[in-house]
Length: 311
Image (cartoon, rainbow, N blue to C red):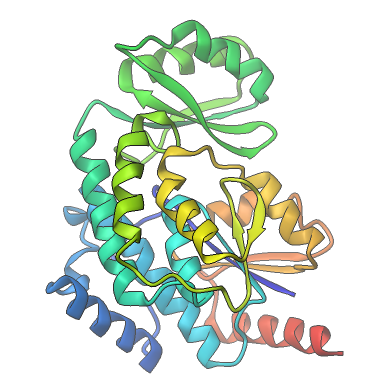
């Protein structure tokens, strides 16, 4: 079975929308984005534009939906989808949960709420080489209401992400390296996602979802907040609205996909972060990303997996 994965903030790169394939599914996605935003999405992927959280989140939405639709148009669509953070929105569109123009407006609002809440002085950092039981006491030691820091993403047993104020994160990173972490680095994320700092913004997102039609998915929608498959529209709306304020459990989500029969995981643009995180779970399967791979190779891989599924 085929799993499509959709990356989160930090995976963006300049020019990512300009390198999408020349195909009617991509053109339609760009045109629908223009109609919903009243602005040309191809202005969003410059280095300067990508300094904005709003532009980053919209780029990841556009690229994920355009590429997902491209494969669906070639009859090699997914059996299940999973997105990390903002990636849950294109995942929901490809699963038939949200109409794309609604997703564009919701993501623009999400980016705006997140950027205005924490315009500077906050962000996220990856810590590699410690498990959560080694890292959590360091976070507890540093965290204060004035300089908060939280455990945000459990991407793998020893690949964790923290979120919070710059100063507090810097201190946790230094302590972690002192305790044997092999790497501690800031991510290209200007907001402290996946912690209670976004509880108020999540309430606003829940209100926005009341204005939107949310449908039952036509394939398995896997939540990376709770590592479960969700099928009820209300549950998925809640998952999408709240995911900015909830921890990410990517390792468990990848394992859930494997247990549900996924054997090929294809990461939508941009980057290969989720491919690298999913690979240790898919040891007897395949993980691959759209970036830096030929389209004909990807179509052949998907066709082969589709054929095996049908026999």
